[in-house]
Image 1: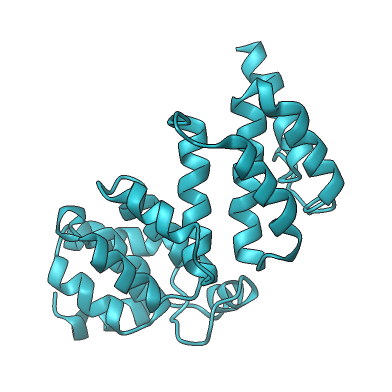
Image 2 (image 1 turned 180 degrees about the vertical axis):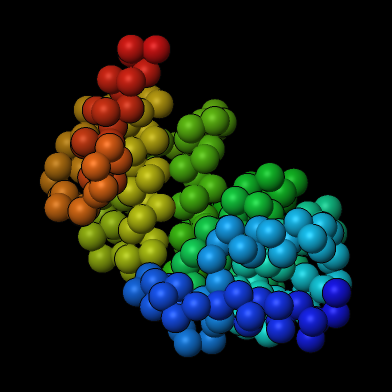
Length: 223
């Protein structure tokens, strides 16, 4: 498919309901409002097309960027490419898809993590904390947990909302995965109170760190 054909296909699948849903989550008007399931179907029909992916990304259209992530060839995406990609994205859901499909398995993810953990840019900082949360959960060796907790306690109250979310995830993962730091993680969560009153659907776990930590520890102990 050409860029023009692909954009026409995405536009035909858009809906006002989905556009409003994206806008509620912080998206701009530069979108068609395509359901995630429909974007996945389009990606399945294209399979991999790295050049088309880059063209789609450069449009800045949210739906096109979602699709671009799915049809990129991760092995062709360098560390510098990733840094360039995140400079042109603002919608947090696109950032998280880029993290899930490209960044978290990238061979240079640790170098990116260390760089982004120092960044003042909210998008980069969000990704830095996402990678840190993943390291705490899967590869905590070599990480100064006390220093992380100090940063979270000091910085999270004033952090940008999109950064708070992944900082909070790191706090929760410390409490869940590292029993020796659980008491302090719970204490910080209670002290800061971030997401204490966050609305959750029935059956879902609250993102409020003390509730999240205690619930996951309970489940793990049952297992």
